[in-house]
Length: 165
Image 1: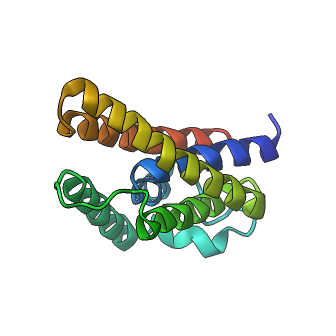
Image 2: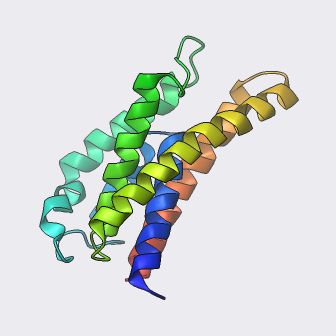
């Protein structure tokens, strides 16, 4: 398969994950690099993103991810559609896109795909979670389902990206 298509696909998918849970793509990329699933250090133009494979990055990003998963359950957490939350998800989608696009040699197009994915994930995730919350009669089960989908998808995407190289 063409590396451009793969870079765009994986960046779009990680962007969608960023729209669901902002810290998940970076934590998944960090764990993937640390575990050797994806090589960010020796890729073309990859030196800039090799820091994600460092144990300190893994710990920090994992703590941030767990913190996000916990705070998302709180009733006073702002909507993902408010400007600060939305903007953060787009920026992280762009960064995750750049990182996942680097081993494929397509950084800049992957940035755009990550941003588009983040918009889709933010808006689509809010719609699906709202519908699930209405169906369950409360938000918590919908939030937990969204957490599981985001984390599992993030790690599977990173693993598949590494296996595709």
